[in-house]
Image 1 (cartoon, rainbow, N blue to C red):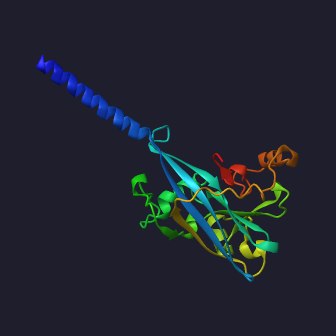
Image 2 (spheres, helix red, strand yellow):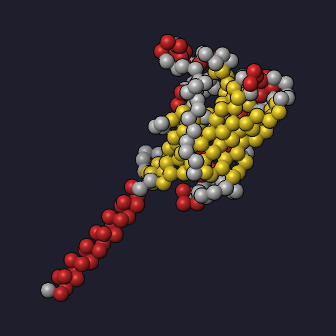
Image 3 (spheres, one colour):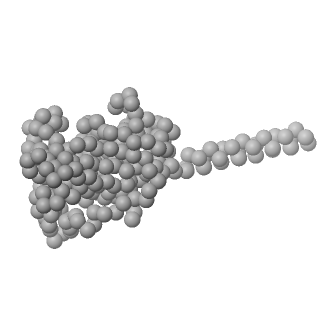
Length: 236
């Protein structure tokens, strides 16, 4: 009788630990970070920032092998340059593409270069200045009322040749005028709420603009293949 009771007790204990472990796998971790973009202009330093949330749901497995369930909620960084126009630093990136907004958090604080941190290594506090290959995609609209006038921007002609060979990209000076240069892009951990400032400035991407039809005709790899999902994602 005692042996049976002991066995039942052990089984219950194992089940409890199993349930706790399974619950841990299902639990989500959320980090908030602020990305700030600073631009030097003849009128002085201009900057803008956005607070985003990265949600980690645990490890994943699939056809592409093991991975991480990461997603980002938030919006692009907007830098108002006055009469020169508006610069946007998107949720997508030069090297990580669509996943940039979440993946950059695992890369930015790693001092060993391109290798990503494990989620458990993400710091709760701290600020870091990004390297050029960690920058988001930068764009502007030549006409803020027409999403089809979107144009990609890079810091210098040399950087354009490195990241986008054989493609027409504007430099900051070509886009915004002489003396306009990107100063830096930083990421800082924060507990501030998400920012939602783009709706008042973004052009409509609705059917009345003809954007979808225009987008579908762009060849694969065209730097203008940028949609509303590159500007904002997630619940409000």
